[in-house]
Structures are given as C-alpha cells and as structure tokens.
Amino acid sequence: MPDAIFAHPRLAPVYDAFDGDRDDLEAYLAIADELDARVVLDIGCGTGNLALLLARHGRTVVGVDPAGASLAVARSKDREGRVRWLRGDATTLPPLHADLATMTGNVAQVFLTDADWARMLRGIHAALHPHGHLVFETRRPDRRAWEEWTAAPVTRDVPGVGPVEQRLDVTEVDLPFVSFRYTYRFLADGAVVTSDSTLRFRDRDEVEASLAAAGYRVRDVRDAPDRPGREFVFVARRADQPPAARTSRQPHGPTARRTDQPRGEGASGAQPSARGSRAVG
Image (tube, rainbow, N blue to C red; front, side):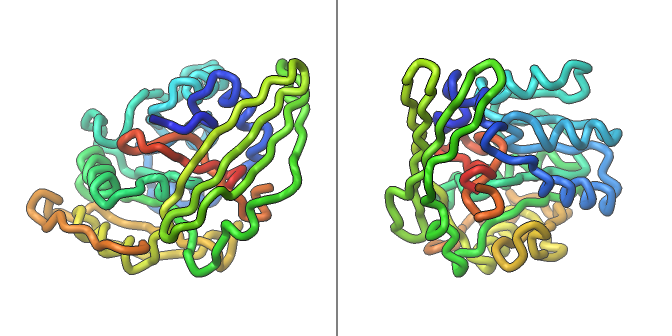
C-alpha cells in the first residue's frame, strides 16, 4: 500500500505545500527535449507536477500512481484534461509505446526487494517504444543523505486547510534500508497524522546490473543538477532483446528540498510500502 503521505485524504492535499517549487523538474523537461520524447510516462506521478509540466510543453503524458488521494489532487490541477491519469503501478500498464518513462524523487528507492524492483523495470520495459528510454534519479549511498533529514518542525499555511506543522524524524538505519516518519499536526483542529516510509539505497553498480538484467542499456549516468555529487541520474534505453530472454537474477546486497531531505511525487511500482517525497527528498 502507498504511504499515508500520498494516500491519506488529509495528507495528500497538503503535500505540495511542503514539497517546494520543484524547479528540479526542469532537468527532466530538458531530457525530454534531448531525447525528442513526445509520449511520456510518469511513474509515481503523485500530485502531478512533472506530468503537468511536460503536458504544458506539448507532450502526450500518462501519469500513473497507486495513491488515489494524490491522483485526486493531480486531477484537480488538470482542468483542461491534458494528462491521462491511471491508478495503478508499473506492472499493470497497458501498451503505451512511450518514448520516455520517468521516475523522480524517491520513486526508484521505494522498491525494497530485488523482485519488486525487477518487476517494475520489466513493466516499464513493456510500456516503452522499442527504442524508448527510462530516466530516473537515485541517491548515492556514500553521501549518507539521511544524516541531514531530521530537522526542526516546519509550519505552512495551506489554502483551504489552515496552518499545518510537519516534523521529520529518521526512525531506523539498517543499510541498505533507511526508515523515517513524517508527523503532521493540523493546528486548526489539533489532529495529528503520521506517515512512515522506508527507502533502499542502491549503489551505481547494482543499479546498472539490474537495468541490464531487465532489458535496458545504460546510455549514461549523470549528476543531478540541483544536487551535485548527491544523486545519480540514470538514462537507460530499452534494448532490442526483451527482458524475458535475459536472466532475471538480481544482485543482492546494499544496494527542506535543498537540505537533501527525501522528496518525490507519489507512490509507485508494485504498490510498495514507501515512496519518497522531494520534501523528505
């Protein structure tokens, strides 16, 4: 099930208020231009920020997420119906022949098992055009970003909701897994709602090996422009050979925004138990 931060009816509507201006998404728009991608699939689209940005720039966009509350927020922003919103995950996609699939924020790190990660990669592979691309970001484990996540509570005045306080605490570090909890206090009525998440930190070699096993060729690995030295951005092309013809064995083992807290758009993949946030990331 998606984390409460994306699926809870009181938390999804306040998500954007704590997630910043998301100027990091301009890099994905530039990559779509670079790859001449006209049909884009946004995996873990959440409240829809990237999907809507791409649609405003003339792309045909499909946003998919298992969190219904987040999709409701996304649809409320899409008054012109520019985006096709699907509730589900990467394993339930129809044939889309997409030129590009994206995973921003923490999406790539919410798949905690090798099996779930492999199923997600194969699902996207089937939804891509034969020479389509998958682009996603993931934090570098050696930078130990979680050591910077716990901070003083932040309060935002959310339109239609009132003042809301957010607190972030790291609850467990058992590498390659890091768990954390968001606590939201709605000051108008005193309600308190929490959301627990876990991310998996995979190193570059592990990610590259898993992409090859799932039927991709890594085109290049870039530095995240908004977080230099902190994240990898993988650009992978769907290979001609289908993943079913390759080995499915996966490698085992370890694998506020500008302060490198977890971040993201929504829940993704095979409905994992966590999806990050650009606001914890």
